[in-house]
Length: 493
Image 1: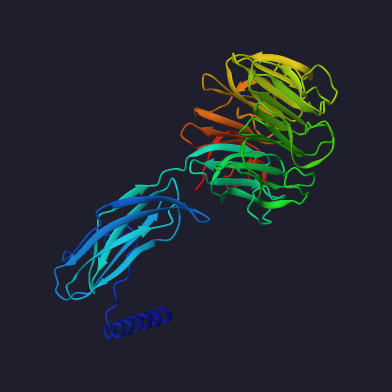
Image 2: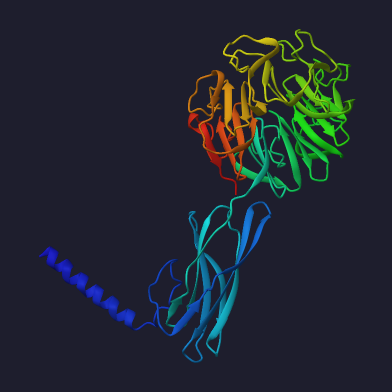
């Protein structure tokens, strides 16, 4: 009986609800969910045509594409009120975005032109217009558009990662404890790429400070400045870029010192100088750039030593030399540049080790070797250059590892590998060169402290190695799972 009683009560309440609902005004038609074909009527016609223009991307704190779409609506009914709308959705999670709303009175016809913004790079969007009268809905044809991926022209890495777009936009990700990102905030790190500013041409990152050259030749620096390494005449740490001067063409960053070559070939250096790394012969800290010499074409720096190529192909080095990283057969510290050899075209350096490529493609290394970073199959340091192999085109050093591009377009690494920075799928140190596990065609490589960045031929940025502070730019951090043992594309948008 109890069950029957409740059943009759349920029927009564349901009937009452139906009667009450029938007395109300008809519910207005709601905006349809994206992709819906429900309630389509024949007396409304909608056409979206196609996206008629992509304005490109602009930078206002985020990348944005603006797509312009055109459409027309009409109704067979006279004096109809028609609302025309468009909506867009993408492969990424997120709400539907209305493109436009236009009401046409009287004639029962209308049109719209809409811009969709922001749109992320490398994302597929689905766009459709629809029209509503007081009782009917009709849809236009779906339009699909995939925004192009951003293309980059150069990269750099320290504890932080950087990439510069072809249009000059600088992006950064990773640690920011000393303002290395240059964004002006105290945010400790970023595990995804963030835009920093426009107009950049070159970037050089160390563990705690950064140098950059803009397209107009001006030199900018930011980050830790306790020993004058920013070159702005002070020892004040900067969380935003400060201008150092103009007329610069090349830059390099050590642990607490900096190097730069001007367009006239003169070499300038500043920062900590306790082991002679500035190269001016004084051993005194320099808070502003001082001239070291002329006719220089390439520079590299790390921890406490510096190296440079002159336009005649001669190689010069100075500074810290406990492990033989100067390469002159001694372990004394030269406080001014000393010549190491000739016929060189490329140079690189890491934590107390050095590398150079001769004009014939032969690779030579010297200095510290406890992790196999010299690539000669041993762990024995050397204060003179050792021949490693032939066919090399580019060479760079990380804190304890080395990355090289060969003339056959293959990428090779060796040395320290605790975080996967060699890109061979393992975590074992390697005493001889091993091939990076990737089919990508890398045109540029850089070594960070314990990670590696590479620029692919299609302008995309790839990374592998340590990601503890977000260096991989993939949204992971503070976990062993943030490390990458093989190259992965970094999504920047």
